[in-house]
Length: 214
Image 1 (cartoon, rainbow, N blue to C red):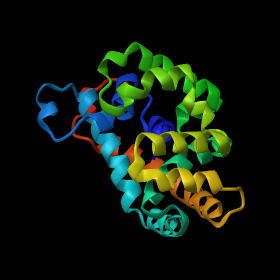
Image 2: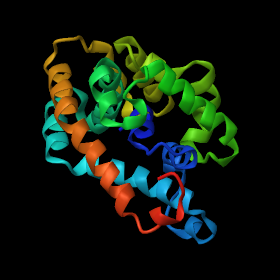
Image 3: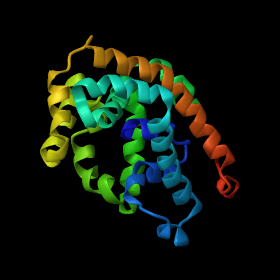
């Protein structure tokens, strides 16, 4: 899943949300030696979301359809679709989390941006490099539009020539294409399962009792 979905899958706790957002920046386990419970849970939640998404049968089925046109970049394409369809179906999906049930997607993104801004010294890796641009250009709201995820895909393709097919795929994509339909069906079926799995992951995490407001 991409940035917006990671933020929405987090519990309503600022630091866990921030460390989930920047979870890609932590490799291996050595960082855990001096880490707070919030940091450990946030990074491990990020990894759980990625693993649960990548290995889920519904995701594998959708990626098989996308692979016909996106090739090896199908998993990345599906991640981008996740944020786009979360926007499109926000009025339904916001009900899956009590803290967003009465909140617009614009307000939720603003809350997340405010929390990340306060803690931006904690960011690592990709999130740290992208944060300034993401905030100033409001990337997460841009993912509301098909043109927005097309721009994101084209930018990724320019920065990383090995995934050039990703930009080509989205540049040719239109609503109603087989890939678009497959991705939307995947999202509507999969995302509620993901939220449920993330909630269970947090509740059962051995460090959860050491954190207040969980």
